[in-house]
Image (cartoon, rainbow, N blue to C red; front, side):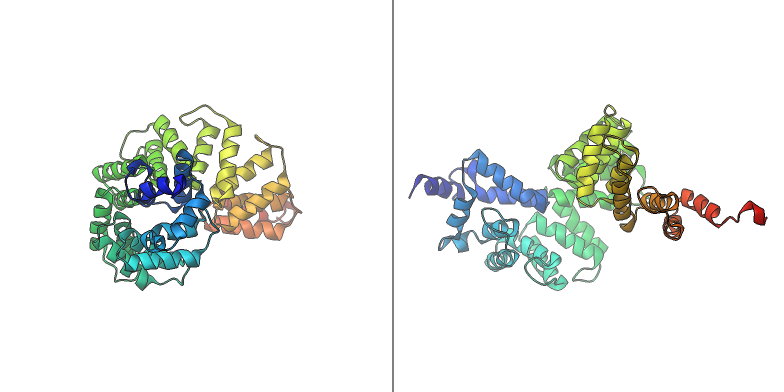
Length: 371
C-alpha cells in the first residue's frame, strides 16, 4: 500500500480522528447546508495534502463502495474529485441507506424531497427521514419536523413537528436550531418567545449555519429578543454573507451603504449587493440597479439599471416595479412607453407601493385645458 492509501486508510478507519473523512461528512450534515459540503471537503484535502480525485478513486475501488457508500454519494452529488452525477449519488445513498446508514437515510430523504437523481416523492422523503430520525440522526429529525409541520408525505401534525424540531436542535443540528428559532418567532410572539428565538438562532449561527447567522443579525438590527446592537448585526450579517447566504450578502451591503455597525462604504455596499444579486436576490438586484441608475460606486448605466429592475420586478419586488414604471414613463434606460409604465405602476400599487399610487393619479389626471 502506498503512502497515500496508507494515510487515507488510517483516516477512514478512525486511527487518526482529526483526518477522518467520515467526520467531515457528519460535520457538514450537522451544519445543515448542502452548499457547505464541497468547501469543507476541499479544505480537509488541502490541510492534509490529499488529492480529491485520488480520494474518489480510492472510495470507488471494490469493497470500499459498500463501506463508504454515503461518502461516494456525497462526492457524486457535489462533484468532489469527479463530475457531478446526481443519479449515481442517489444510488449510493440508497444502497448505504438500505444498509442502515442513518446519515445516508437523511440524505436520501432530501433526494426524494428535492428530486435529486430521482423523481420527487413526498411519501419516500418522509419514510427515509423517519428511518433516519429513529436511528438518531439529527439531520433526519430536522427534515422530519418539516414534513410534520407542512404535511409533506404525512398528515400535518404541528405538535409532532415541534417535538422533532426540538430534538434536532437539542441534538446540535444547526439547521434544526435555526428552524426551532423560527417556531418561536411567530407574528404574535411575546418577549420571552422572541428571546428564545434569538437563543436558537445564535446556537445555529455559532454552529456555522448561514441562515442562523442572518437571523441573528436581523434580531440585533431590529431589536428582536434583545436590545438593538448594530455592531452585532453587522458581525452576523458578515458571517452569513461570507457563508454564501444571499440575504446576508444583501443586508451586509445595506450596512455598508447606510453605516449600520460600520462606516459608510459604497464600494463595499455595491460589491455585496452584486454578490447577492448574482444569486437571484430580488432586493439586491433592485439595489444594484439603483447604483447603475445613479452612478454610485460604479459607472452610470441606465440600460443596465432597467435590466436589473426588470429581473427584480418580475420576482415581485414592489420598489423595482415602481422604478420600472418610472423608467418607462420618462424614458430612462429604455424607450418611453406610457402603457408599460402604467402596467408596472399598477403591479407596484397592488403590492402596496404608495409612490406608485401617486404616479397613477398623475397618469390618469386629464390635462388642465379639459377641466
